[in-house]
Length: 317
Image 1 (cartoon, rainbow, N blue to C red):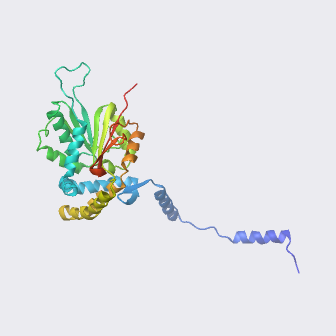
Image 2: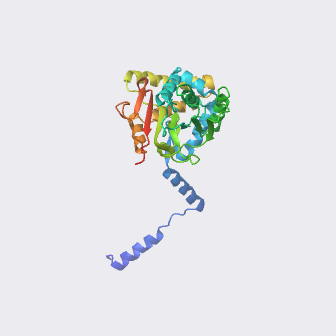
Image 3: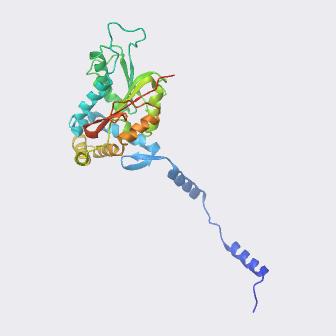
């Protein structure tokens, strides 16, 4: 009987190692694997309840709003039972846009405001801002820049402006821009930044908030009207049944587009709570004004179905 020696053991181990074949990987397989790993590592975000690559969300949201542009206000009337008009009126009144022209103005008193309305392609908020400044504050100089990333929404707003006194006015201008990159707007040049029912569709909300902070003058106001979280369980249950049951069906019957309105409902559900969003506004550098809900920088409308958020850019020094 022979016993293994160190030489025999080493030889046997060497033969086994040599017998192991390294896996073969073709070039195309390697490239495919690299692409799959890159997709897994890519930053993702939500599109409604669906998780998608961040780079893809902008085009998908664009397709939604291109689809609904012509019927947007009609659908908003039906979806909110016309309350969105009351919310927007309240939003603008609470901001009191424009400079009140007194009989004895002080030497340092500004004579006009520059207002930037983001995601305002249809002109719904812009027309209200200009009307309030003119009729309430007797301000005939303040102007509004309407910004929207979607050309179809801007085209709809320009068409609607033809029915107003602002159609050819220098006080109203339009710009196609991404709220996350407002390079065409100078820093410290805006008095009031508004966004109504738009910020929940942004891919990078913090980037948009930082841009809002950059373009606002010290002491300038960030103001946002957006759907939010309902506090009362009974109201919340009824609201959810209406949102997920009726709204996509209305979209199908009225606009022939169920999927777009299904996304809009899901985007509302995914938007941060009042406290969470107020925290984001504060993180971007804004001061949260006192006197609002729990002094947390927001005001609930209809039990939290919608909310108004504000932030003030600190003054220098």
